[in-house]
Image 1 (cartoon, rainbow, N blue to C red):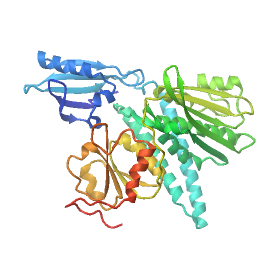
Image 2 (tube, one colour; image 1 turned 180 degrees about the vertical axis):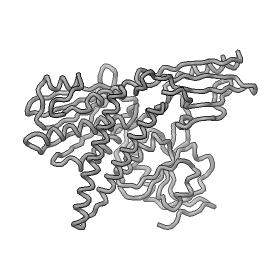
Image 3 (cartoon, rainbow, N blue to C red; image 1 turned 90 degrees about the vertical axis):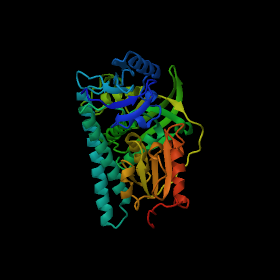
Image 4 (cartoon, rainbow, N blue to C red; image 1 turned 135 degrees about the horizontal axis):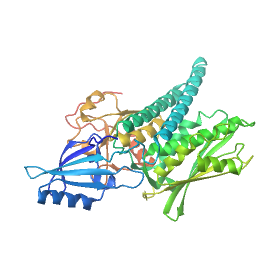
Length: 442
């Protein structure tokens, strides 16, 4: 990885941010960015005070756990009595993803892309058949679009890694959003195999910490492998079930995922070889398991499996729960309206993907300056609170989204229930701010 800075700030002597010089990742959008990045605020404050009082450069390294890159900040005094703090990642000798060898990561990405292209190809075939018979093809078009967006996200991640990205994609997130979106995408692609998702109500309140796409890749790979095992067997028809519940371990509360199939199963030594050695058997089952194990570790969890001939295979994942939100009744609203997301990209990926699975057309808006291009296109705008420095000069339904203490209508992490509440705004009359330009009649 390169030594290119990912963040450059102007601080006062107390370590508070006065101005932002360079922040391509949008890190300072988070008002409590030190904690969100896993950095000790006390060390940050001491470094700023030492730099100011001694009027010399000070350097500090922040270790953030074995699965996250360490960060190095250099504090430099200025003639105006300010401090410039420049952050870089500690270079990796082998240019590897933290915890995942580059060769294994590439194999995993290739496997994911191949599965996505298979799903999209099947959706295209089904769309062609429906079109010839005059049936509605809207569902297949949406599935192809979601597959293409996920493929784009994977390629973006590869490019960011190889360019030495700061990899600040880890966020608190509601795991059930990822599970439901993955299940929706997979359900129509498993020819002859039924996919079932069962989620205990309390799981909607469980918040994990990590990269949401990592959990999606784990569920995606294990489900695809299970369906392939069923189709390769003599039965060719069967069921893959994903069950989500919560339990307790020695480390505290965990979210437990069980991904099971009723396929041919394997002997004990075969499942042991796949699970612990990551080696596929001669027919190819288990491809991607080594990558799955690394992704589970990235999420701080563990994986186990059981299998027997004729009884199918079960994978068990225990993922640590970061925190739980208050009890909320699940609420859904589905539609096809157009929704704009002017929020940090790492959040937009998760929430936009789930909204797309519900059938909404989602547009990612880079900044306030781009809003004028969407005035006549959006039914709802969800904007990051700190981008709302002045009242919006666009009409329509608007929701502000941010962190605790920001004054936003909703705070992160957003759950399925929160999204449902947001979408209720689509059923309410529009309030056009005085002096704003209407978004057009729809």
